[in-house]
Structures are given as C-alpha cells and as structure tokens.
Length: 230
Image (tube, rainbow, N blue to C red):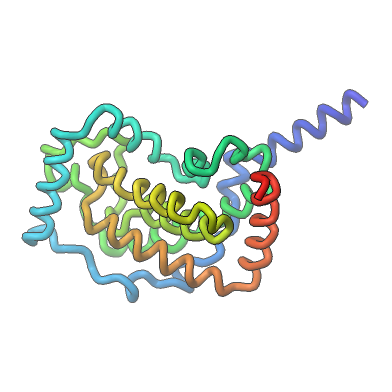
C-alpha cells in the first residue's frame, strides 16, 4: 500500500512539473493567426513616437516606487496564477488540474503566435535603444513588438473572465496591469504593450471558435467554478 501511495504522489508531482507545462500543445500558431497581417508595423527607431515612448520609460524609471518595481518583477512570470490576487485563496494549481492543463495550452498559444512576429519586426527593446534605460526585470533581447507578456496577460484575462463573468471587471483590470508592468519594468515601450493587447484579444476571439478549445474550456470552467463555490 505504501508503494502505491508513493507512486501516486510521484505521478501527481509530474503532472504539475514545468517540463510538462512546457510541452503543452498550443491552440493556434502563426500559421493560423498571422499577426504580420493583423497589426500595423512598430514605430520606426528614428520616429518621434519612439522618442516619446523612450521619454515615458525614462520618466517612469525615476518615479517608480519599490512596490511598483516588485509588482513588475512578479509579473515577469507567464502563468494564470498571477490572477490569484483577484480570484481568492482556492485558486491554486494543486486544486485545479484540469484548469491548469488547459491554461498551459493557452499560454503556449501566445508564444506560438507572437514569437514569429517579434522575430520578423525585430523592434529593439528600450534598453537596446538607449543605454539610459535600466530595466528592473529580467533582460530579454528578443523583438519587443508586440509584447508577449501583454499578449498572454490579455488572452488569459479574456478567457478567465469568460469562465467567471462575476469577476470580469477585476480580472480585466488585473490583465491591464500585467501589461503596464512591462513598461514600468523598463522592458517594453508603450506601442509594444498596446499591440499586445490587440494581439491577445484577436487570439482569444480566434481560438474560442474552435470545437477543441470549447470542449476543454467547458471542463476547465466547470472545475474552476466548483472549486471556487460558484
């Protein structure tokens, strides 16, 4: 009996491992949602808009508080559990295995759709554009446009709020802050974040049309609402 219990615990731990999450299958890719045809190109490096956006980043850099920096650093993680502060104490991976696996796929969808567009446009990030910028979050040198974090935050927010419409306002406010924290952290320009919000909205609308998505969404929603007592 003890061996069976240990085996069950080992299997459960594997179900929530980062490796497993990274192997989740996206609901869409750049082949099915081409952001190069859906978004306008980023502002040119020598444009007035980019200079204005750099000014915003530098202004925030000298005015942000330690709490703002901490929030930006915490939001560097791309997963649905960043919404825990608006969802309550029962919103935990160990209590929501079906929901967790579903959102692993949602998160993987962002990268599959956004990364090719980033690689194509290759917009420099603020710290690449100016040595005056000192990010307080992990440095990334991939293309800045559109912001992947903002895209996935918006995408997760829309999907989650469709599961729990009673908290739609709070969930979408949290998704909005998730994007703003990329500017506060000094790792993205304003246009990157705005494009990410559009991209996240488009991806959400497209994948919600898929029967496969709807089947998994329904099961994840039922589990979430049961655990949350809704």
